Length: 294
Image 1 (cartoon, rainbow, N blue to C red):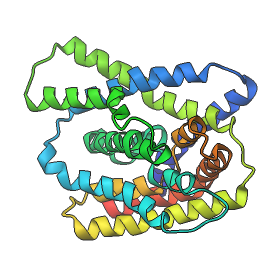
Image 2 (image 1 turned 30 degrees about the horizontal axis):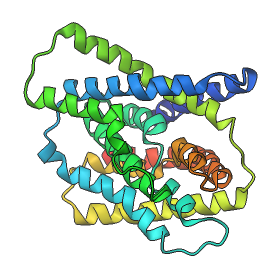
Image 3 (image 1 turned 90 degrees about the horizontal axis):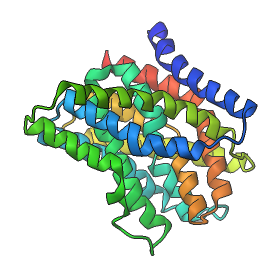
Image 4 (image 1 turned 120 degrees about the vertical axis):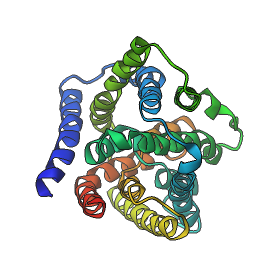
């Protein structure tokens, strides 16, 4: 078990660490361009090829979708009841809801549970993105368009993959292989870019960052327990959800808070603190998930 844990966790943190080292040695690179290509091209290709290769029956996955929505939205609802004078409510609840399901979540879950679970993993990833670009942006700005999430290439790639798979549309092999090849770029690039991005942040509010991230883990644990209690979940989905609530806040939270001037310096500290804490939390969560799954 310990060897399996090392084989999952060390490659992920190694690529993140190399990204951080490279970012330190070669600062000032055009990371925004690389990340945009990953969001608009490589990750949609990953989503599309995964759904084509591992077709999903959406009706059969409705409990997973409901559970995924619950563990995303309920922590935000619970923490919105708190009154913390040191941070605004939107800056507090956004990182609680939206975890690093892309950069860290996809590689971890694929390594832990294999590509045969990639379809379910993609469902959780796409769901998180949809809620992030709809509910999340609504929280940040009441004036923002509620339909901005429709511009997400990941959404359209997911819809295309579901249609192709469920309608049994025969695509040329070279097309599927090309999409799969492009998709293979996304995961290591996510991890490498995450390492670079972490070196650009600040950690000035260390006490606040630690307090918030511990609250996030507590709220996530409560949400997970409630989802398992309420919903008829398949056994193999529970470890995926367990890892989902243990992930650190997404870097995208900081980018959006900076765009909408919602205490970005505090959110940056929370994101960085969560990623630092994940060095301890993630190996423990992976161990528990593997123990539960097998």
